[in-house]
Length: 318
Ligand code: GFB
Image (tube, rainbow, N blue to C red; front, side):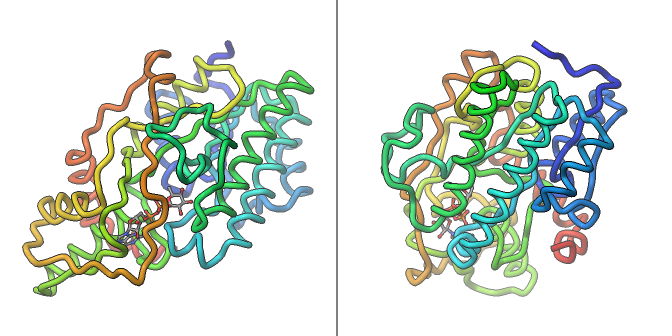
């Protein structure tokens, strides 16, 4: 199994995003000095020729594929063409260039929304492609499933050591706090902070509040990514989560408690609920020796503190 050396040439694709940023920090903290990054302005990963040239020039040995067009339920349902096209192109270009330029190992990152909408819970890896997907993120999910298939096909045909980690819903410092594009956790955190500061009496929560979601703190994910890179070499998705979920209503109450917002919640039934539940079965990763360690309240408190300290950056970089 290839091991990351302090001077290994490691490319983190998507280092400006929530996931890539956490992976980069984790690698720096572990003493890795030969880290390769490009902003999307410097390198458009949808551009095949540019990606090929980049790999030819930089010759990375390890690749963390954390670059993606991502967003919450509204962004996914409003821009399906972009979510499908951008993510297909990014995955195809990076995975193919990694093969052509002899990358030792690549970790492709996906999402729990790859599993069928009504799959049994918790979601086992083998449920992939056993039923219809959730409508609100079908385009994104199809691109992420294609990326897993690419990794597996390059493994089958060429012996490439490309693996796929599937994180549950993520959150943490560096998240997207734009209310139209963000996921539920940063959205509610921001709305409650704003409401508390403005003395508002209610905060709007989309949907019915009954869907269940699982949340993983992004530094735990970064830790899992390094673990997978060094210990796992097998086809198919590998779930990364906490194994615990809660309703959106309970999440809203927990965030209100952390923030100190004492008003009411107003549920907006005109907004979609999305999939009723997507709890990861994390027994495979647990059997390999990894489990999450940041509790939801602790992670929320850290994210809240980060947001307060970096509000301008959080609201202007997107
Ligand atoms: O996090 P979220 O946008 O995405 O929404 P998904 C989760 C749930 O929270 C839905 C509700 O039931 C939303 O209706 N919700 C309540 C809110 N208030 C809000 C709010 O203010 N903002 C948002 N965004 N939601 C995404 C997929 O699904 O999850 C992606 O679209 C990806 O493809 C990602 O898989 C992890 O969990 O429903």
